[in-house]
Image 1 (spheres, helix red, strand yellow):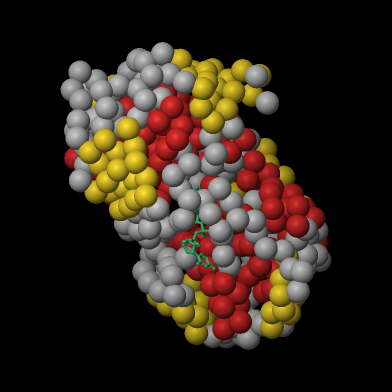
Image 2: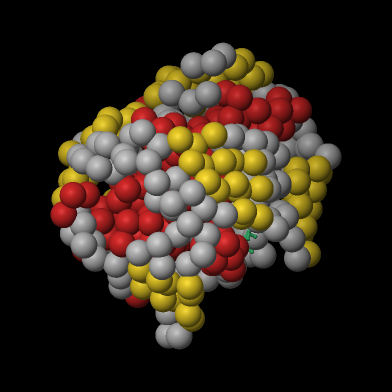
Length: 418
Ligand code: EPZ
């Protein structure tokens, strides 16, 4: 088991191109099941969740290989229709294979994705969307779906990212037209739509609350470039806000980060955003300011995945910041770890009150989930002394070599075997 040693007190300086987005490549890998020939994906991050998705594709009979940031999937040999419990547990978002499996095979057998560190991960909206397309579902020691999907009217009571993606993928293979209303509007949904249309599908409306899919069109193989990861960018910008200095990130559309940039600007950072890069500068001699309220919400609201990193930056500030986490039940597991570093944070259910302190100090801390881990690394770079961060398996799910990225920006960080 490895741990990260981070020595704080040094401002960050440098430029970096942000790697491809985990939350785009995962649904696009599932979508490869629908392709009519080999698919080549570029700008794919090297992450454990990607490895898990490739393993699922291979178990279903596809050829799937990653070389560096390039992935080639050939689905022509796909014949399986079941995903094992181990695979479902390894990655909560394995549920995203349900829609394309049904569309391709006419049946799908999966187990429930585990409740993860964020709290329960229900899939009722995924199942309701599949039912709305005419497929039968029995829940008996797992989820068993059968029937070729027909077009239908899908209404999502919550703009769920995963349920929107599952509905899109099932609809592409359905025999008629499907309308998805109250769809999620995250940028990664737009990337999925662009990918599907590049194969010959006809999907419209991603980025709005209503998506329409003209199903049943034959799809080809193709090539596609995965978008940059806006949450990795938010984490690196939060680290710069915590440590001070100046960083420039390219490969991400700043418009996908507008709410995060606004909060960091309100806190006192200088933020310059262009279509192809984002720059943040913070003078460490000037304390950050608390920001009245940071309330997470579906896109284009403040992203729940950026809540922990931004909290880490604002833990050292003048004044208070009130966080309201509206998306998940248990997304404050980084708070006790920040308190061990000297933060002053009180949580009550989905609310966290951060009373800014003058400084944090290094400590032994543990990541309990992916973005909480990124947050603790950001906090450590703004703290005095050395922090020893464990739980790196969580971090490796969504950050490709976080320590390398931070080193590129001048941070004193190294990864060692514990
Ligand atoms: C996606 O998860 C992301 N994961 C999450 O990122 C992200 O936090 C989340 O969207 C919200 O933006 C991927 O894209 C792989 P949801 P997802 O369905 O699709 C409830 C990360 O750190 N809900 O939009 O699982 C659910 O409980 C990860 O990269 C139901 O009630 O999220 C939550 O309260 C963490 N029933 C809300 O909807 C359902 O059937 C939003 O969840 C589905 C969801």
